[in-house]
Image 1 (cartoon, rainbow, N blue to C red):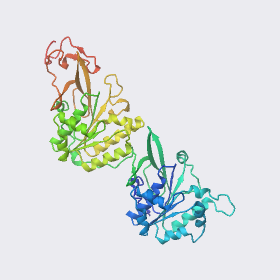
Image 2 (cartoon, rainbow, N blue to C red):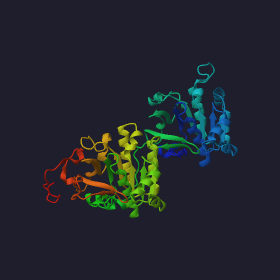
Image 3 (tube, rainbow, N blue to C red):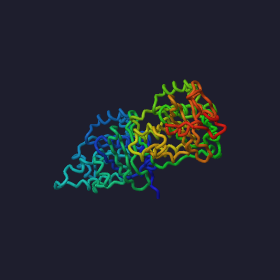
Image 4 (tube, rainbow, N blue to C red):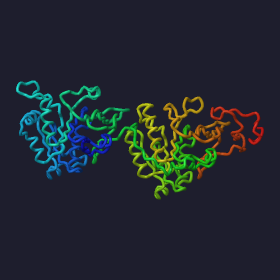
Length: 511
């Protein structure tokens, strides 16, 4: 028979636990000082009393009742109100008194719990109970006391949560004291990552059900409490937009004059495109045109900008004739700006997923993916994150464009840089500067276009005030030194050579 589950009520934690904790489980929270053990335990009792009509008890050894109530208020939790209404009982005592109480059959602790009908109990600190009086004649061992307490709580149908200070390396090796037999063990961590404080949560074990393994991120948020973010690598059940995926040949305009023709009509619906180029070649301009093109067609678009604040993005769009505020006002564009400096990847992805599911865009632009490289800790983490994003967009039938700054073109080992992500996308567009004479001119090459025939010819392009990026036709003539690209070899090498003559009769003849 499947055991009933108890929801913790903590944001994001129940999803990782597969719905909650099996009722009656003994839960042990381990971690070093400042890792969030007390906050998790107090919120477990608070959410039960407030949200699920499950009265609870909190036992603390190190903090007074008044201080605990005051600290909880900063997180938006009114413990005093719950105490006044008989939904919660807070007991502040010492380890020695606690040990004595537990040894009596008419324990005041258990009596108080029974009096309020407690379904949850949180005891903050096993370390004191485990050492105080240990080895003294006439004293029960910590293991015996622990089992006696658990047995009394179990008969009352109470789910108990305890905290234990334990170094992360000890918990990682699984060498927690055998005296403390727990059904569920949650390990919390607080580490410095790239000089940022990073909180992590891992379900080490949990008897009676399946749960999501691995290390997940969490934050303690003012006026809210704990918010847990599943690790970005975690497999997710994706909603597939059957309408968008019904016609696998449907295309969507790029919004760039001359580019749709190079792509046989535009991007496939639901495809992913990586726009790679050196700074200043027009990646952001192309992205803005992609978003604006969707708005003109009545397709909602989401733009995620990491490199510039929203005001600058709006200003830049106006220079190429795009009125972003108007599109935002009529609900066709959602502009989300976030700084990558203090970004947590798991949190960022959860927020992105939430925006996508709420706003339901048909197009998404991320400008730019290279900004994430200062946030992730390894190449593997970046690739996992990129893969999670592409899967998210494909499962929703969203056509997505990702800008990526790569300072090299020819001679590079990967079009996606050192992170090896080029195999994860459907299309790759290369943008570059070409030096001809004493001028820089922009070049565009379709390096990859999955499931469509395309020419690998490099085309000249330019950014025009009021209209944006335009891909120029191959047959053009300009004043010297502005010769057409067809007159040169090796455009992407940055050291092109003039043709002595052109074998292509339609390219403009000899020069």
